[in-house]
Amino acid sequence: MDWDNARIFLGIYRAGTLRGAAALLQVDQATAGRRLSSMEQALGARLFLRTPSGYVPTPAGELAFAAAERMEHAADQLQRQMLGIDDRLSGVVRLAASDTTGKHFLMTAMRRLHALHPDVRVVLSTSTQVSNLTRREADLAVRTVRPGNPDLIARHLRRLEVGLYAADSYLQLRGEPQPGTALAGHDLVVYQQGTASYQGDALCGEAIGNARIAMEVNSGLMLIEAVCAGLGIGELPTHMADRDPRLVRIWPQRSEGYDAWLVLHGDLNRTARVRAVADAIIEAYGGA
Image (cartoon, rainbow, N blue to C red; front, side, top):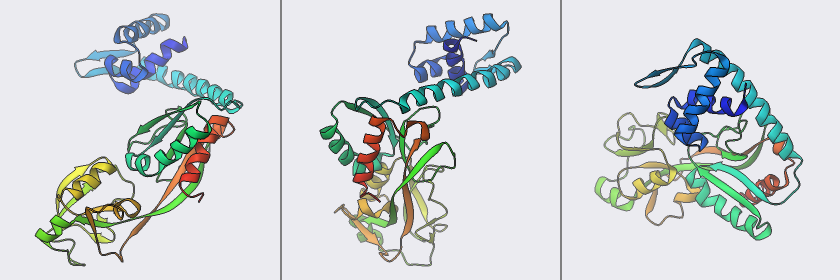
């Protein structure tokens, strides 16, 4: 099986469309179509049903996926191992984190890194989605959940906290909520379901069943901006919200803790440029 064709096949399988696979793999749509046709001709089997809603794998496609994924794992492992013996302080390092982490910690780290190692180029992706380090969607990631994969190295960066905040304009209009009322009579700004690992059916230990959800967001920066705009009460990281003059903390005695972790694949731990980026991030978090 040709790896270039298999790579396109995997992209179509995961994206469900030629266009999605082309965007994912940064090739044009016509090339993706030719690669798929070439693979189907080589195998003598139809791998996908072309439907109005997208490409649906056939039984042969499911078998091909398992084999192609094994090829991908082997190729990724070889690439990681080659990078692991690379002692050059130059080249690209892919880093994944949330937008709030990027703003409040990583910019400081990247400024120090660039001053020391100007030939290291960092490609930063900010998202609440967890990047797959095994498939090298990123070389390093800052996460709020410690991974269970034994191939990944996790370094604890810092214990952080969230508290309840609102804009002064909101509190002047609505007043401060009363503890034990499940935030009755108040509006909330929360993360979309599945966005924040620590968010549940309560904010800082207070149930939210009697509150009204005014807005749901999938970005930490948008959560802060929505609370600052007076849309409702929000649970925000104290290291950011305490510095924002637009915000007032509610019930300062209440908080919830969470951890920040620096995660990388074990095969990349000895790559000089990856280690340089990791060291800069650790320093920005205070060397915890």
